[in-house]
Image (cartoon, rainbow over all chains, first blue to last red):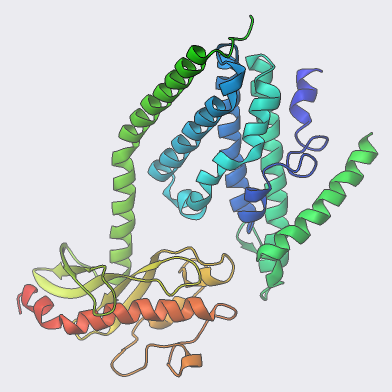
Length: 195
Length: 198
């Protein structure tokens, strides 16, 4: 598999949210607006790439029976770093996302890529995989966040599109499930067309 | 290269090394970000104070225990040319829809509200977050509000404050936070004014 394909698989073919259905907790929880989705996606991308690098570097020194706890410690460290750095240098973004950053630790996507890809491939492939999957995750979250923001609040990235309150259900939790359902269906159609 | 075998010694050593490396990295990052984080928090507090007070050139901080609650309220006395111009009270409520809501309320010397700005909350995005100044002009109605002449409760409860559609609980909680600040301010007004040199 070429590196280009390795990178692009995260967007449609193996999109973490729409196809692998990994990391749904942040995907449903933070996507009340496109901006939140994008911020969460990029923070996850950073953690994913960093943990993929470290896991692929240390994979040969870790006995297989303790690999999961070791990977978790690596991931949790990077999440804490993101948390601290964001609060220190990006207080505005931290205000809206701060609550959800620690959730990246329990995001199955990060653990899943460490276990399924980074621990079996070389560092360069792992970086490409982390970037592709992370940006695919950010893409999915921005799409879902944008959809919910437009339908629920009549705004897109905070810009007002039409007057009025929109459909409140899309801002609340049920809207996340409804929106995700339609986006998964849409992604399946696109995937079939591509094949 | 072959993977390391899962012997007891190998496993213990690996976990110890991984944990030690992680602790070391985190301690370093924590030390590096400690100051900027405190600066960012302090800047946010200062920004909130200057939003709810008239122009001032000196601040003095006192704290009073409110009658309804155990956590003390922080009173920021703003001085202009050594004269007390207003008091910014950092207040809170736990009556919100989820978690604690914190707000900064500015009072003039008679106890009229100058302005209110939220500090932190975890209310529902899109509904309860209308208490934020940037999201809605809802909280502007408190500017110039006189709690001794009007009732600091939402209209549903017989007060004079407009509620927020679909977020009555949040609006009610915000009134509770402001009311806590006002009650405490009025109860300690003498002390505050004495500190202010009158």
